[in-house]
Length: 113
Image (tube, rainbow, N blue to C red):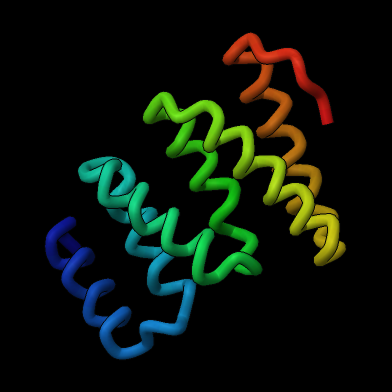
């Protein structure tokens, strides 16, 4: 399915179920490559309005990093690790901690978990 068709379909899903974080998340993922600034706005909305939706943190942190928003990326990784810990999601904890360590290393930042 072409990009614009997928984007339109996801927006339709959002209009039908605006309280479903997955629809917003799917749209943000779709927009990351071609419209990163728009994806950023959607990730920010997800983090604010659906703070318990764990998948957001990993992808949002990577996007913030790619946009040079290092402080926001760091904060998002840390909040995601804390949420995964509260939710006792061992796989997410491991993935987020690993990604966070790589982020710190690649950006020559000193902090550890």
